[in-house]
Image (cartoon, rainbow, N blue to C red):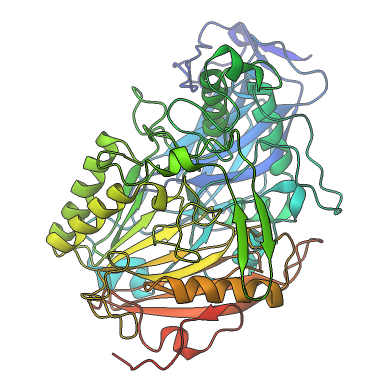
Length: 588
């Protein structure tokens, strides 16, 4: 029998309440529940932890032909305090999923203890012997927990990622972080998937389907990405906190802003760029829906499905503030059409040709915004409130490099890109002014998207009268920008250090705030945070052409509480990859 008649089944195990799917569905009156067996096809995941709750996720795909669209699948979860799952669970509940949400299901597990590790498992309500793998997650400490007591007095470690393109490499960075580091939170800064189909390297990892446009397209791509073993293991073993890059580049399409992307908008011509004829707004809404289906992320407000900016208070140790610097009310950016770029690299120079002068001319417009007025106001208030509540650190997760990146003294030529902060200079100035004028200390900005590593002191660009790049005096914070999990380097696809280091040297020499640049290796970095210091450890993958856990530490950086700068000598004066600013530095 493929269906169970609900009226012939004890009603007690089932909750006939409205199931809050992304757009809303109600299965309270359905006469059947699927009883043909399910497969937890994509493991388990958790995310957006708070002090007393966390989201847990799975996908319960029906076996065989499956039910029609009107028949739900019932999924149960159980939560324990030990991986052995002993005795009675501390919490358990059931909910429905269906075709309407691609058979994904998210629960918010509530009434948990702060700063505590938990283990969870899913099962088929109609056959409890069918279970998922066991997931591991945790709650955050309560906002008033003293900084020295957060995480039981041990440093809190988070792993930071961005830009994972399926066809260009295996997601080994996720596996290294999950297997070989002590990271307890995974932070993803965007480009979790890519909407395009090109860029494949000869590693046997071609993506299915076409350039993404419809809900089917986006679901298919998430489905395929989540077959990577390292990604599955990383989701299984730690809660994730994510933002998209550009619902946009590439969770929707490349270089999105509030009214379009590189190749589409809502005009007749713009719609024709999409392989399905879908217009920009249709693509965006499909992408947002799939993102919320497939990732354990909270919908911040039911009235604004596009809002993903939010704040996590992690005891008195830190505020983790996640921004949307790519989609939410962003003013027009580099649409790359018509555009031509040619990159020519040598050991001493980079020639970059571009025709994006119009958008580039807007970079200094005073009211131009990367975040939109509402988010920008919220961000400033959040920074101020964080300091006022006594949090030691302010860690800002966002998508794009904040520090100025001039190349040969010029803006807007490949690097920096017009859709980075260098294309919204007045907005960056307002952020820095707020930090300086309000004496907001211990701010650390995390960045992704650039497919290269950059570490900088935070200061007004080119202002060497108040900021000393040798000692770090005059800085107001630090930026740690990480490379891609797999996406190719903008310094040259597959380029070895011998080819990328000369380019890094040009960047380091031409930008006073920039202290380290590295453009060859794919990888990630971790932040280890306690009340006295933050240590950033950068990991480089030895090989992404096969699945493996081979990696090395390319650099380690330190920031002391109250100093607002990288400790000198930067990286201890020695890195295993990339280029440091000249190391005749004095300790501070």
